[in-house]
Length: 75
Image (tube, rainbow, N blue to C red; front, top):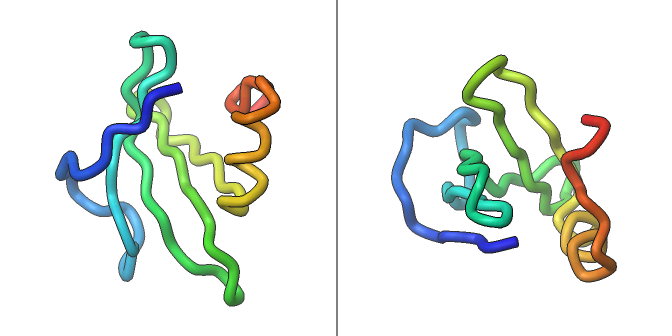
């Protein structure tokens, strides 16, 4: 998974810490952002097609990537 940081797009969440795009195997280009929720750093991934959002604690998201799990499967 490749994370491209600094690509601008309209923010989905007021107060987002960082906005970027996530590309998976060069196929998907998913808008994403970092934000805080109840003191935890979270990542939100947003579908351009149907508007569905996946939100994960950032630490869980990075651990899943490191272990080879396809994070977006199953929503």
